[in-house]
Image (cartoon, rainbow, N blue to C red; front, side, top):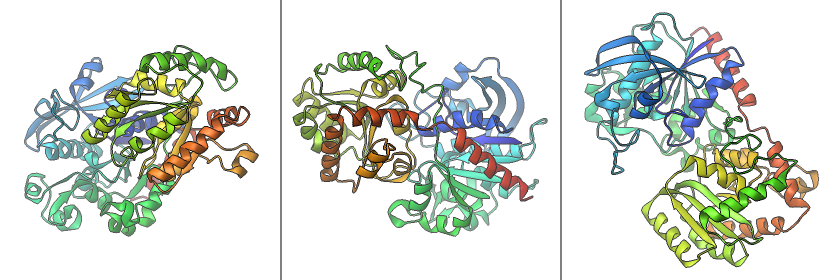
Amino acid sequence: MKVLSVASEIYPLIKTGGLADVAGALPIALAAHGVETKTLIPGYPAVMKAVKKPKKVHEFPDLLGEHANLLQASHEGLELLILDIPALYLRTGGPYLDSLGRDYPDNWKRFAALSKAGAEFAAGAVAGFQPDLVHVHDWQAALTPVYMRYAEAPEVPSLITIHNIAFQGQFGGELFASLGLPSHAWHEALEYYGTISYLKSGLMTAHALSTVSPSYAEEILTPEFGMGLEGVIASRSADLYGIVNGIDADVWNPARDTLLPATYSATQLKKRERNRRAMVERFGLHDDDGPIFCVISRLTWQKGLDLLHEVVHDIVRGGGKLAILGSGDGGIEATLQAAASQNPGRVAMVLGYDEDLSHLMQAGSDIILVPSRFEPCGLTQLYALRYGCVPLVARTGGLADTIIDANEAALAAGVATGVQFAPVTAEALRRAIQRTMRLYRDERLWPQLQKQGMKSDVSWTRSGATYAELYQRLVSKGL
């Protein structure tokens, strides 16, 4: 089977979050099931610099008013199609934001062009690769099934994956005329309270919908988590699937991770001590026996990290330490930096994101905090399981699906992998931290938690098979 994947980022070329990890790992997992995937991505500077000898396979003289070339290249096991439009993608900022952290004002056009190119490719624009199915990711690629729906071309089945329904690609209704779609597409697909919603349009026109965990698929049917699109999701509930994400088990493998001072396995947990010492040194923490809690995250309300400063005292008073890696909301950043200043040697923070450092933190910390108010899947807790860093998570979405709470029954059965808490309040988080500290002090139970987590299958093996089955089902319908 041949599949065209359309995504706005892909690891290891360009990454701002979990979407990139999925877009990069899923094609490799699918190859084991006879699925040949080509991924269409924008030609950002990082992409153009990384790929070697790309081959021009198509030219768009007028793609929403821009001249574009479609380039083909291979990179670290991935087959790529790169949409080369320097006027739209060759910029000094990030994929979506300029160097000052503001949305590019022409994001509507940048990702409409990506989607339209995907639809034309699906219609056979490039000889030699006619996809059997098109899989698009999030709002940035969500117009692809829209352009496919209204094109005079053979119908190809399409699947849209919602990685986070909070990001919807909403733009002014006056831009509709610039999208090159027939007038009836406005009411049939794009219109959202007088504006355009790219995500809504994709949910209305794709043949099937998926989310990145079974629990999140149920949650987005409710007003609390549907972010205004719960009605649209409910109307498509028969076509909605929840498939939990996996991780790249080669990149995230403590036994072979070259970024670590010491590699180790579940039977060699004492070797983690060298990574712990490196963590202590890197963050300037006190070198004692207290547990090291870590946070590796965007610092946002969604991630529940506005609550963190309320529980810092509980961590410190209990003899623990806290290391933070992340950036985001300015107010949250300021409160956490203040906590670090007030608790030298006990609380430390690195502002920003550092992929290498995140590996060390997973390998050297004892506990990772993921107190998200909602979490479609989450990958951080999966990395933590792999590295013997026990996850303390909110009971929501993919966190609830992937972590088995260390309650009395689960501990007795030897299946617990972490700690869950609910609701997402400072008091509930405080109690969870205290419970986790008690577990940490139990020299019999704590290694059991670590080892059980490291035994968890968090790879793409199972989920890749599930996606392959869904693809086959959609293609077999003979749309």
